[in-house]
Length: 130
Image 1: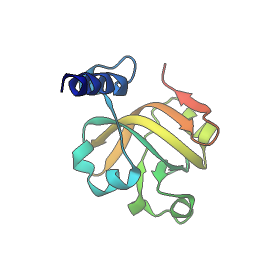
Image 2: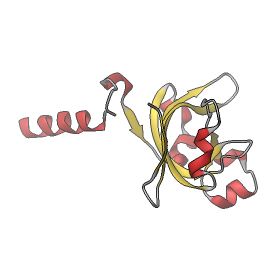
Image 3: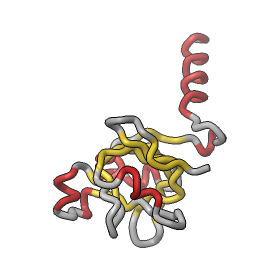
């Protein structure tokens, strides 16, 4: 039993993103689950993968087909809070992993305060908050 408790503590510490407290830990979640039960992850930091279009409606979609037809029901907006729109420059129109804060703004759920965007195929970091 003690080994299980130690393992759980080690795993919990491992899931915390560097520079964040345990209360601010990052939850790895599928985009499908985030769309299905957004309230479960509201006001939490999330790590999610999907197709990032980076266009005027910057969002992470389930796949490129959903992005091509602008199926907003299968996407979550990703708010680019950089001065020059740097989030879209490196990973636009590709599959990415986004780490950011997931919250409801009174109108819709979205990911803001983005910490990192990474191309999932090349593992190239497209943008990272300093």
